[in-house]
Image (tube, rainbow, N blue to C red; front, side, top):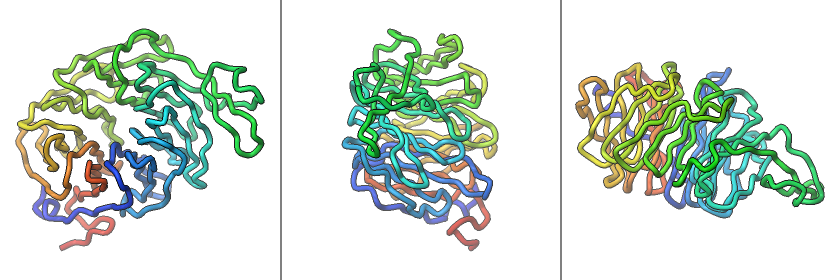
Length: 340
């Protein structure tokens, strides 16, 4: 990393009033723009300009902490998982809630397939069930007992919208599902759970295509948006890096000196970034030599989420201190950062 990049002052995005639990970028759109969504314990996920961090809007409606928030590939939809026993799907242009998918317990994870205007949503959490909802088949009914599927009230006409769903791998999970990632192959769904396992599911056969046991409790499990997709997992003091396209293929495991809550890999640059679970520091490492290159201070609490922007020129961190920070990761002028 250049000294110019290391010296760049991060951009701090205020607005949340409680710890930030999750961050996720959209891919780069046709207009070279991309977006950032944040989940937070203040119940109010926020949408921002991914380059500048400028606030665009807040999705209002949850009555509990939002544990995970994701955008569709075209950034037209957002999905959120909440402690209010629901997952919601939102229109990012109007801020309108399109679907409320009620669950029997806290929802910790949501994921869209990697396609524009997705009509499927995967959810998981404290129910220890991995479900896939078919949003395209939502329909109206005056009787919510007409289906065992989760329901949502339609404010326009007072009826109930029913979204059919099915469970993947019933009985497999004995622990909370903490994260769900839908890979580049839309037939493969990846989960991280409190039993310290990463599972790759083939949703065509609804069977496990691969499974990997980790040495510590899982902090984060994320697929990057860069041109070479990879899955990065933080567990205990270890960072695990898997192929983004081949289920279960472990590329490397790296032991760090510190407990980490989150990790993100920039494969092209040969570097990865970690967020501390017991300290408020962001650390940058060399992927090949495993040497620590830099330590960035600025947060005032553990860093629960870290994610590279889809163009790789910055990364974002979300912390217990309630802030989101954007960190420059390129030598040239970019966004609000100017050349020295």
